[in-house]
Length: 233
Length: 233
DNA sequence: TAGTATAATCTGGTTAACCAGATTGGTTTG
DNA sequence: CAAACCAATCTGGTTAACCAGATTATACTA
Figure 1 (cartoon, each protein chain N blue to C red):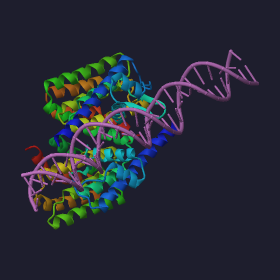
Figure 2 (tube, rainbow over the protein chains, first blue to last red):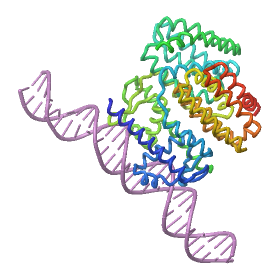
Figure 3 (cartoon, protein in one colour):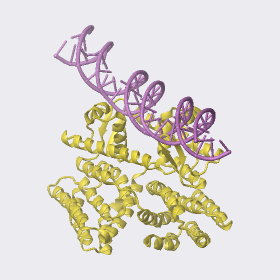
Figure 4 (tube, rainbow over the protein chains, first blue to last red):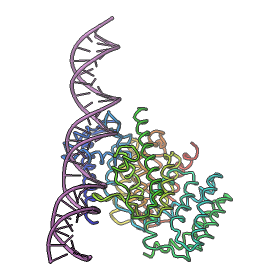
């Protein structure tokens, strides 16, 4: 189990190394937005790494909007300045994994906003989806079963109802990791879960009544225990 | 230019299709956390697609924490429940691209938090980095040049000073897209830029003095114009 | 029969060969 | 001389072959 983690880590280091080399190359050649990078084959030869690793590095930079690959044509510097490019790449290379506190802190932050937006913008079909998630959670809890997943899906339904595609995406990125940690550390005991039903219902009603302030307040109360837990570990 | 966009979109559809099939398979076989998926070769044969496409689908699901690939062993269902898995995959398949308003809205939201955290937690070296970004911005503006990139790098420096690795990552994901849009729509004219120097300075000083409330207030004022712009397009 | 050594098979990852389409340079033609 | 054509080359993407290590089935031994 340790070995494969090690090889993956090594691979990440290799890719980051190549990213740094690509950055140095772009600076050395004064490449500007729209300029073409050498082909993947050239880069892999120059850096003495496999073409696959070069491709991975390029794909990562493409994810962050630094490069743009066009089939049968080449890889180009995206429409972003040299200054920003250097700054962002430096940040990418320094990126560290999310710790649990950061995750929860961020989740609370995002959700206090999504719930307000959802209360303002929710459509009827959004409301139906949130209600369905709410019911699924309630049933599970009343059966005395663990309902961490249903809990989070209720919150994801709210995120979708917020009508903000960016927040929705970000929530989707952090939620699986949160679920894993919750189940690992048993953050939610049964008492919390039963109490959670009423809290969820309050949130749902506020969204239904399109009352953003109330929705936020209810969400804040709902997060109270989590908030304390988060700052006591 | 349209063609390659089309092929890439097609490819995304292919991958999403495979993701849906993998989900159906996992449900059909009642796979639970820790269970092993069929090998990539088997899946590619069963779905009648290339092994590469299967790998892409798996990698995407791995990114969202649904699956876990272990070299020379297999691909396993991650430590996340069946319910959450289905819900999250459904959301992934429905994910739409971020529109500009969502991006800006999210950025403002995140930054009003990061600046408070930065004021609370910033180290001395964080402060130095923020100051450097501030100076780079000022010099560029006073020279009468466009400084969108330096502007955003200043904000990224604050995000890093927040000590929240998750927010830092999320900011890094959305910033390049914001820069591109800013430069495209010329959001920042020169008057804004000059005014921005003082505003940036105020924010910096509040962080330096470790005054979270003031920092947030100054950031809010700084975002005032952007806020209006964002809701008037 | 239980335990162990071992060989055959299967795994995700990596490398190399191949593909269709874009690019480019030279040539021809009006 | 300019424009149109064409073939050679180069591109990122795709496919197929290969690899080292993990797994599993088998046979052998105590």
